[in-house]
Image (cartoon, rainbow, N blue to C red; front, side):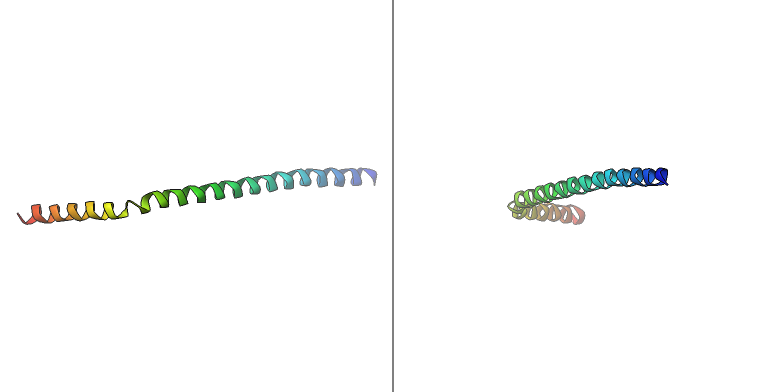
Length: 71
């Protein structure tokens, strides 16, 4: 009977350690997701100002392709 309780205590302790590691990993993953979202926001803000220039460059490229295709 004592060995059964000792085994049960050992299993519960191991599960507690595993649960603690899982919880730490989930917290770390949440921090990484937040950092990734912040980086995406920064990238969006950087490219948002260049959108007009990008559209103009693609417009000129399309115009040149059309001219060379039919010339």
